[in-house]
Amino acid sequence: MITVPDLLELDHISLAYDTPQGVRPVVQDLTLGLPAGHIGCLLGESGCGKTTVLRAIAGFEPVRAGRILLDGAVISSATLQVAPEKRRVGMMFQDYALFPHLSVADNVGFGLRRLGRAERARRIDEMLTLVGLAHAANSFPHEISGGQQQRVALARALAPSPDLLLLDEPFSNLDVDTRERLAFEVREILKTTGHTAILVTHNQAEAFAIADRIGVMAAGRIAQWDTPYNLHHHPADDFVRDFIRRETLAEQREQVFARGR
Image: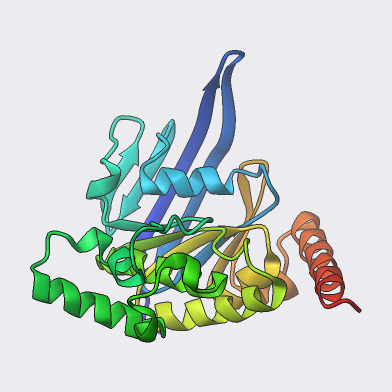
């Protein structure tokens, strides 16, 4: 079996916030590795620390201990903080953060201003074709659906060819059916382009639809970092087993309620 090297490495990182009452630990001694071309997911309830980890990878939160490495180079440690814009990391936000006054094409090309006009136009066309929205290039965000806006945001994040793509609860603003369908679509797009990506979500269905590796998080730690199959069939402990079972039942109830049955 060919071993793919890890593109992203979190090496015993700890994260914390300064508060008036003192330092509040958020993530403690967290370690994981994500191979190039793979999709990872941090899965857990609100407050478990998953979004803070994503922000640390992006460069928006400092590391108190440990290291974050991208393609073998340290980008964060207790003594080093590479600026976010120098990390070659793309980020897709929960609310898409599209510019309402710009067309779909101009939103996708926003991060490509250093390219020449012809090369920029070619890259925009390539990205819109990739996400199936070439026909909407001249539309504005308010003129397309939520699912289409989500794909525009994905195209914009991929346009500069980042080494790593981060997705922050990318489907949370969509209805159940659209959410599940787009999770599969996003996985197919990322596998087509070969991008490495990591997302955070509280929704197990999304995690299992899109990710090659999932980290079940609780109280700032990863209880198990594994394949979807192993999480279901070989949980590391009672917490993981109960979490998977509880979330599965909750998602089934949500689907029933959403469909009015």
